[in-house]
Image 1 (cartoon, rainbow, N blue to C red):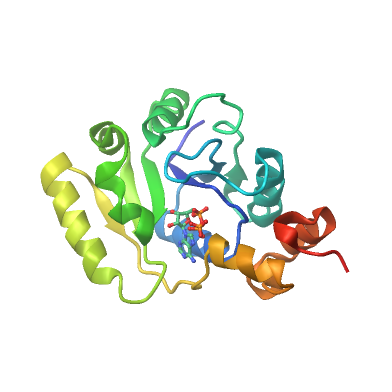
Image 2: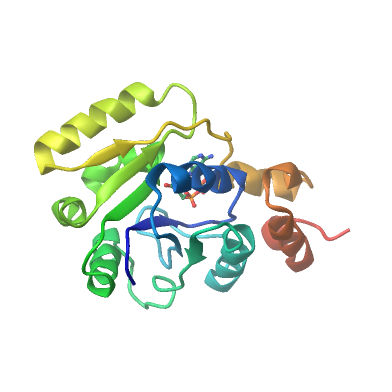
Length: 203
Ligand code: ATP
């Protein structure tokens, strides 16, 4: 693997247009050789996922694999242990010894970065690209970026972004009452309906 690489992790339970919109902003902004979307296996930040790892991988491929410069990786999903971002970045660095690595995150995840496992290793391995996911988060993001730079010598790029304000958890609730299609990539909605995920009824 050569060139700069961006890592975009998440549970993607399900992937939605907020994720797609973030990738559409970040791709030209960072111009990496490629972005790896990495669905988490057993995510350390969440108690559990609703859809199975297999379904989340299929949905991530349906949502993202056609975006230019974006690939979906099953590396974390195929590991039996909990995935920590530091381990994933170390793996990517071993595969690509030159070129920059970016950890791409939405603002909510960014604000929790100081509590992640081995933050100093994360910031030694990668720059962080952060995008707001709701209006009004800019100030908290700037303050956390300053803190991380001071505490960990972290390199943070705040990427200007107009987010689609949606979350997987809100969508799961909407899908159970037959709504939410407008905020999902079409192929993802069709898959959810066909499989009856999130209590979404096939019509
Ligand atoms: P949940 O509602 O279950 O917490 P989520 O919508 O936050 O899920 P994740 O898969 O946990 O989705 O998010 C993966 C990454 O995408 C995180 O870095 C998160 O901050 C970012 N993200 C999620 N939704 C948006 C959005 N609407 N705009 C920008 N970034 C987003």
